[in-house]
Structure formats: structure tokens, C-alpha cells
Length: 179
Image 1: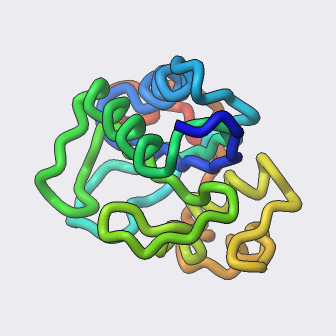
Image 2: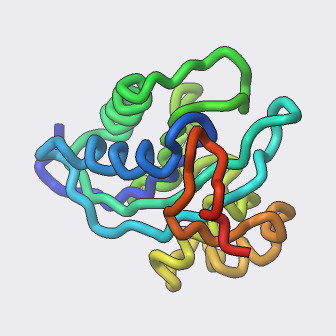
């Protein structure tokens, strides 16, 4: 563990159970360690699933900015521990899940490691990551490009809807999706 703090951006998503509560609790769990400090939280958006099996419920997605003294692989393990605390099951790639936490960027660190590729290899094409990130930090850049501009170009941008936090019962928003 280093003593210097590194800024990291984490993407969180959920499409099973009490999605909004899961995201809120997961943020608290992620910053519960003294080695991880919360810098900012994006608004929550509701999105259609990207990839994976058909028929999945919509996701709630958000992005948080943290600073940490953990090394990249230590932060990844911490993210996996938080997923496990929320009963994440990894049976189907891109399948339904109670919680997904991805490291999008870790400072300027670049890695092609099989356990952790940074920046996240598909983040630049996923509006469900880019759009909330652009709301959190309008000047953010990924691979030298504005995250807002990347979000506008992403194929899933038309499927993003604001989420007001109400009516989320068993993963089905009764009135919570703002149309």
C-alpha cells in the first residue's frame, strides 16, 4: 500500500433487487475503508442492458470518484468484496446482477493485465458509464477525449433515462423512471 492518494473513477450498476438501495449502500461500503475517500457521486440513470442475455430488467447506473492509497489490484479486490457483500453471482457474462463495480480509470495508470485492464476497455463506448461521469465531472477525459462527447456518440445513449429514486420495487420502477 502506498501513502499517496490516486484518483479513481468507479462505475456501479444494478438490475436485480432493490437497485437504488443497493447502489447507495455500495457507495458507503466502497468508502468505508480509510484507504478510500469519496470525492463525488454522479446522478443515477436508468438504462437498458448492454450485451448479455435478452429479457433482463433495466439497470440503474452511476459513477463515483474516489481517491485511494490502495494499489490498483487491491482496489479491484475491494470492489469484488463489496460486490460479494451484495450477493453478486457471476454465472452468465453480462447477465443480471445485484451489483457490478468496475474501475474505469485509476489515475494515469495503464494496464493490460488479464485481471485488470485500465482504462476500462469498453468504457469509451458505454453511455451508461460516460454520461453519469460527464454529469459528475464535465471536464473529464478518457483516452484524451471528453467523456461527454464520447457519451453523445455511444450507441446506448438514446436508452438512458434520468432516475428520481422513487418506485424502485424488486428492480421494477413503478414511477421512478422520469420520462
